[in-house]
Length: 287
Image (cartoon, one colour):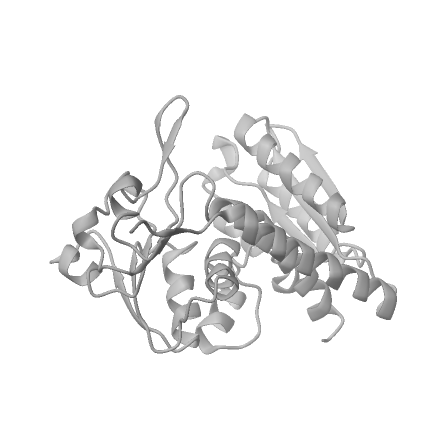
């Protein structure tokens, strides 16, 4: 029997609707409209698509959206000054610097991202927010792992007491997802390039998350029958062909539930960004 396909579009719509209702509540109860400022430096075509998508989604949900386009030759100091200005702007609740930055300032990415006020860090990358996530305090959490948890909840897939295995230990997905799953009482194993016996460990998972960035790394023999498989990978293997980290066609015959690529977790990331903008506005109100 084929797996239940967890379509990102369905879950993203529910998350966005929840955010829209929260935006209305903030306007009604506090007279506050959440605002997001996205800084884009240079002319990277993929980045421009992502920024347009974020701007459009903000407008759909009633969130103020400001795109700050800066030229390719922007200096580090000019970019830091712009972030300082937005940190001080009471109408902007979330700040996001679109990556990658141009080659001339790319080496300073960490310093630039760390300049964002932690209360406005809607990407959840600031060390203060990372620390809060680790100790279990309310914080802004990276959008993709937060989207994975939200999807499991909306799909009524139990996390408490389950065995979760994450393949990949990035700061953007693997590590934050470890802490989010642990906070929900899962028993979590994180695997990576140095892990021995990866197929055996993967087969123990009730929830298997593939976030390694390696096309079709997870094969059907690595999946326990009936397990939930979340594929975070997006790999371009031909000009118009995207695949995940999981061999989807083979895996869907074994898994109980599985996310496709494209059309899966990726669609939840922008939806969770909207939730983070609302959350940031509430944190700044002292809620």
